[in-house]
Image 1 (cartoon, helix red, strand yellow):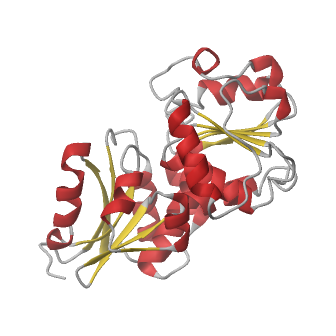
Image 2 (cartoon, rainbow, N blue to C red):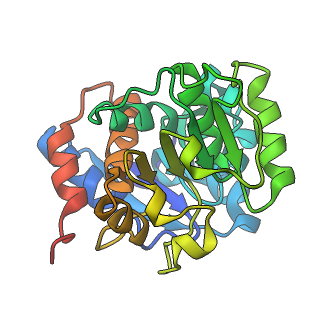
Length: 286
């Protein structure tokens, strides 16, 4: 690899990407690991129409890998020369590695979600789960929950999206590799599910989640609610759900867990999870 920088460069690519906490999180991890002098991590805002060209030019600029976020995860898999089994089966990639002129795609979103759920009192096994969304993050959530045994009943995992046809496509693609057992649903009954995962961007700009999503605050009690949206304050969905008696998992925790898996792929070293979590959460209480 020819590089314009002596450092091994890493980044998160998205559009928009200014809200991402990945740079401060990963930079903190690199410092703790004693790699800050050799590695760096930044954010790159890349529009969909320039995504492929931009990614293919990264190795020449010294990049050895990137995280990929909305809206590029499916496109990231398509341009890869090779991919992990998880990325192929999910149909999306959030981690790209550049080596010997080739692009390798991985998906750490799935494992990151399950890692984040390990701290809640409800195991996915045997529990009905509702995934809101049909993009790359939704695909990872459906695949991960199914593999953890969340599909025991006929409607074990349901995929819902404001574009039902896209949810149907995501569901059928994944079902070729893992038994999901549920079905795409346009009007889910929230009370039927023990785990609800919001992978949509609803709430990122302050939208009312109970107006935009098929959820009611009064039906959150006893459920596990995961929201991948995060910001300087807990999302409106999680704040309301927690006050209603739900167990909540926020997008920061999922970000930390998937980010740690990505960093281990690139550095081949175990990242400092607590350091990453503290850096990602910095400013939440301000």
